[in-house]
Image (tube, rainbow, N blue to C red; front, top):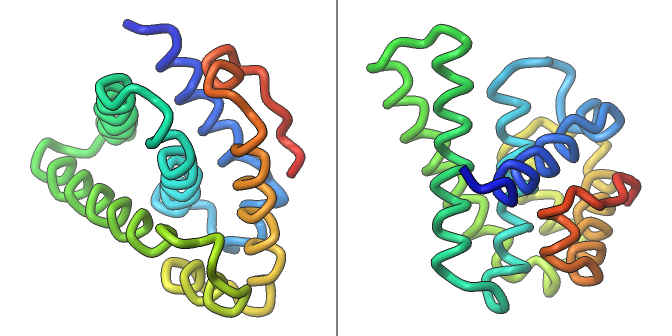
Length: 157
């Protein structure tokens, strides 16, 4: 097992566990809500590093990432049929997120809020979460992939 992948995955999970971020996204504390937040982080991560990172490396990390989600579902106690359905749903949601954030930098805050609101009921908090992901995108542009593989990141965006 590649320790880079473990560190990358754990870093993205830690970012997704940010309590102040989580409270903006949802009032509920469900596995699916947490996975959605994780998928957003992963989508922004891939969007940033896809052009200047080895495609094979990113593909292997992608496979590892979704395998970890599958293992988490098994750990919770889902059966094989349920896991297959949930994984299909999560992968489809992930590709939907990737598609919608493809030109994130060129969108205004209202459109960005609509994208995030498609997945969550944001009420009046959409500007906070839009600012979070704008800042996360800036942070990604200033941070090397190596920093993520060594878990050397700043959680404050």
